[in-house]
Image (tube, rainbow, N blue to C red; front, side):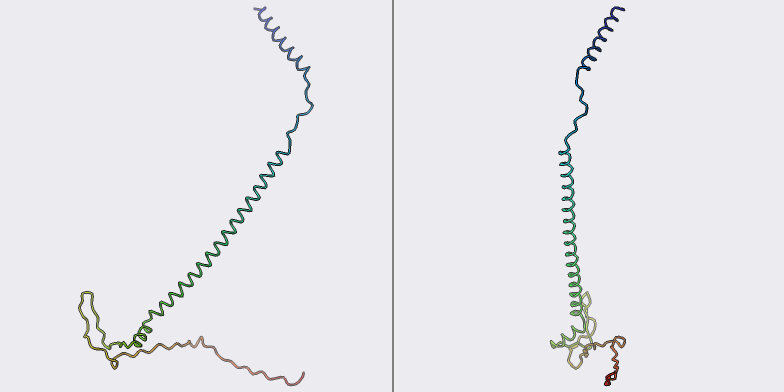
Length: 165
């Protein structure tokens, strides 16, 4: 057994000596070569440029959306103003006083005793012919400004300075 161990030891030591001989004979570089810097700089520059262009496009898109929003808000305000104007015109057209005046211009007469029909077709009241003598008078409501809103005229006299002070 000792001879097998000695053979194994001799073999391992000869492998170690061969490796040591090979290691002594190889040339070891004094410094490791650096990777080239140009590709890295190009990559970083491209990423930075793409980021700046992306931010510029994003900012432009936001500004365009802001202009669109302002335009739509302006159109909505104009539409709301138009709707309010139309409602006021409709209220003026529905005014009972105005309707009565227009009816009188057409020759219609308001009866002094009106007659009504119920939902089931019954007549409530006594139907009589309306004549211009029996008609109610229609007078439009005068448009007056309340006293609080009337402008008060105040005259101030300033003496003319004729002397050449």
